[in-house]
Amino acid sequence: MPEKTSPTRTIETFIPLVHFLGAFLGANCEVVLHDASSREQSVLAIANNHITGRKVGAPLTDLALKFVANREYENRDWVMGYTTRSKDDRPLHSATYFIREADGGLAGMLCLNMDVSDLKQARELLGRMVQAMGIDDAAPKDADDHSETFSESIEDLTENLIVQIIDGAEIAPERMTAGEKMEIVRTLNARGVFLLKGTVSIVATRLAASEATIYRYLQRING
Image (cartoon, rainbow, N blue to C red; front, side, top):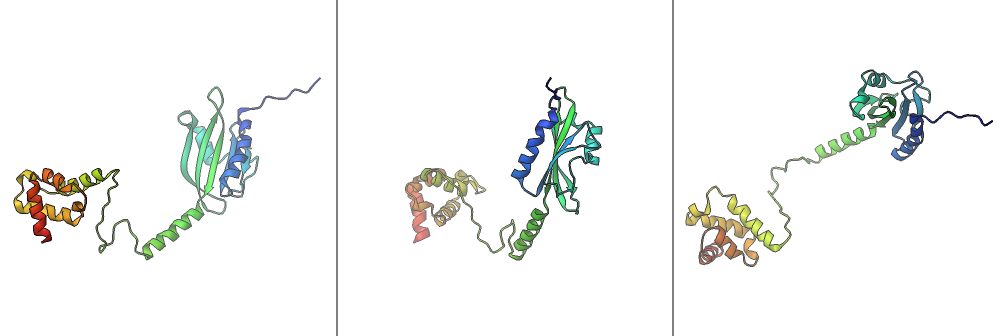
C-alpha cells in the first residue's frame, strides 16, 4: 500500500520563489521565507544569507514577532521601507510581505533585506563631487536665464513666444501707451520672434495695434 504524503502547505509553495528572487535581485538582497506556524524555527528558506548570517531553522525576528502579535496582516498586505541592520551593522532597506491561508490566517512572511551601504556611499561620493564642482539645483548667479518651450508646430512656437512676452506685462495691451507697446516689440524682436513668417500680423492683433504700427516700431528699433 503506497505511503500517504501530507498535502503541501500554502507556505511551502513559496520556497522556489525565495531562490528565484535571490538569484534575480543579487547578492546584496537577502530573501527569507518565514513559517508563521513555527516561530522558534521559523526560517523555511533563505537566499543570500550572508547578509544576516541566518540559516534555515532560525527563529522569527523581534519585528516579525511584533507583526504577528499586532496582527498587521489583517490590515495590509505588506510593510515596506523600514530600516534594519546587517550582522556587521550595515544599513538594510527591508520589506515584509504577508502570506495568508485561504481562511485569512497568517501562513508566513516573505522578507527582503537589501544591503544599501554601497548606494549610500555612492550618494555621499556624488554629493561631494556635486559640491566640489559647484553644481546646485539653483542656477549659478552668473548664468544666463534661459527658458525653453517645446512646441509641435511653427504656429505653436510663434504663438507661445508672443503670448509669453505679452502676457508677462503688467498692463493689458488695450491700456498700454505707444512707448510700452514699442518695448514689447523690442523684447519680441530680441527673442527672434520676427524671424518667423507671419508674426507681425499676430503681434499686431495681440497688441491691439495695426500691422503698420508694428512695422514702424521695428524700423525704429532696427534703424
